[in-house]
Length: 204
Image (cartoon, rainbow, N blue to C red):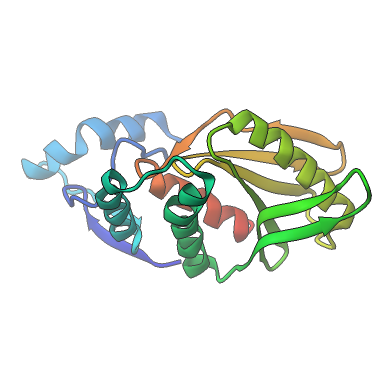
């Protein structure tokens, strides 16, 4: 994964979505770092993922001209570019419309099956119903639990309607499904979303 080091005043830096886990530092970077940098009080440097700014700009530029009324449009113009970027950072292998047949109850077609080393990610693409996608994704993760040779104790999945992503986790030993309450929006939360996807695939 390649980072670019730039000033807090660089237009590529998105401070609103910054979260390092330390509330005081989050508040400083969001409210005071840019002003202090301009006034020469303190210099702040930020590491951002390369290429993401270009992708974000391309999506923002294109969205007003694209009709996103179909699942196909959302997959091609919003989901696929994110996955292509993920491939760049992780060299993950991607299978599209991957057929899975465990038994009569657990079978179907996976929209995106992404694998890197000892980790996998299942992505369910939907046109607009996230909750329905979460239920379908949970079934798919259970199917993968019965089939996958990967020995990780957790399997990860994501539901996306293109401009919104949500994550789901299957705890394999307890067979419990956890639905992340956070929603990640494209293009606004693109950097945060990509960092999560990269961390999942690299098992960080």
